[in-house]
Amino acid sequence: MKKLVLFFLFWIPIYNSIYCQSESLHDVFPLEVGKQYYYDFNLNYVYIGFSSRRDTGLVNYQIIDKSEFVDSTIWQFKQKRGFTRYAYSYGQTTISWIEDSSYFEVVEKHQGLHELYTPVFDGYSLFPFFKNAPDSDKFYRYIDTINNGRISFSSFFKPDPVMIYFTYNVNYSLAQDTGIVTSKARLQGEIVFYYTTAFYLRQVFTDIDSEINHTPKGFYLSQNYPNPFNPSTKISWQTPIGSWQTLKVYDVLGNEVATLVNEYRPAGSYEIEFNPSSINHHPSSSVYFYRLQAGDYAETKKMILLK
Image 1 (cartoon, rainbow, N blue to C red):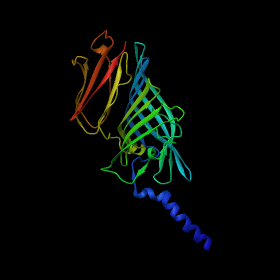
Image 2: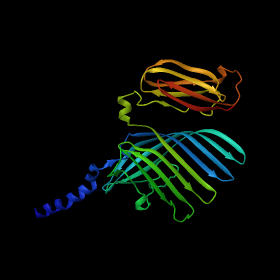
Image 3: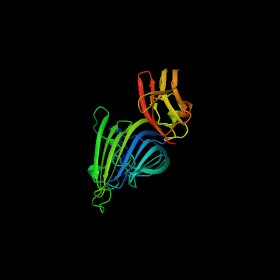
Image 4: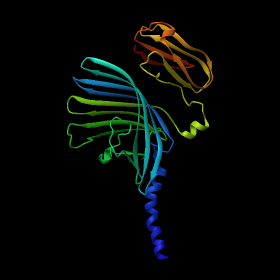
């Protein structure tokens, strides 16, 4: 009996330090299977004097599974992107629409503030949590102090000590019970090479949310797909409230060329097709802008007809 009592006296403080400490802290990166994060993102990759590329679009991160261990949890993520790539090389410019997907893991340690890291460093991702970063630059799920539900965090380190010219600098903005709101990073390579990334949170929801409530939680105008397009493209948007909605298309001079929607619509998600040949039987390659107005909300995006 004495051995059993001693075991519990020994185990209780350890259990409290590992599993219960986080109850009194602020969760700035809540994790659960089924949660999804949508971000607008921009990636600029520059090889000075030779080539560069710019990717801009939307990325979806979804937590699809997890594996529990005594000292950690491994969260399995799926990344799905849709974006326009502008590539410049030796005076030539190409524009293309790309869709891709990949999988990766985020490890959450159970001790202390619950350090988060990715086993494999990926500077192009929203989650470059470096496993071997110095203590001052580690990323933690929980923090003990927070101002107005927000916190900013910066990290500066060398992803590979052998490559002495490579440095990585990232700045995060996080919100309690939400996760990463913005992320801006720069990797500086050997003299003439660098790339930058920027992510801006659009929406967070879980599979349960989407099954229970089909009403959108916010206004959102999607990038048309495909883009560039030929001969037609689709534009989708969502509104959380009913309102009079207009969706108009303009040319590069600001002239209105088409009104796709001009009516009252209830809250919901919508999609419509735009085909320039309906207004011009022989349209040439051109840049268009489409603008959604729904109540007090207004947003404009660019699309490209590439013949």
